[in-house]
Length: 146
Image 1 (cartoon, rainbow, N blue to C red):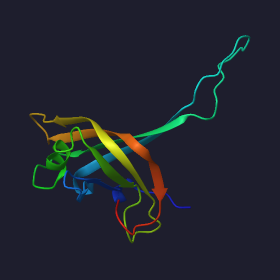
Image 2 (image 1 turned 90 degrees about the horizontal axis):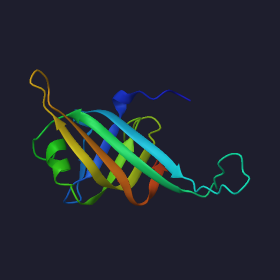
Image 3 (image 1 turned 30 degrees about the horizontal axis):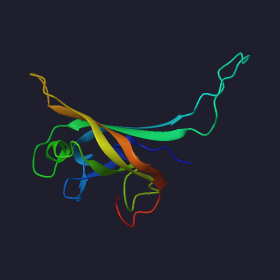
């Protein structure tokens, strides 16, 4: 098993016209968080919290990068996704023909969107998406991006 280098990361979202938009070129950090909300089943006389292993799964994506407001790039695409569900595709080891790419896809909704423009630096963005319906899918098939 080989290590995965972040420089090969691929991240894309569907824009408001359902076209796949690659955000990798201006991105510099992606975080995928998976969680399970296991229900508590603690009863009387239990000395510790007890949980059932039948919880609901959830996922969140956080993307950061350099601001780019050209057509079909991160600021233009992300600002049009407010209040809408979209698809996301994340491949930590790159896309398509690269060695053993694994991709994660999910239907998500934009939670928050931030632009940071320091007076002495490059403008950056940060966006967070949460799973909106369905589930997070892990695959190695690149027949389609999404």
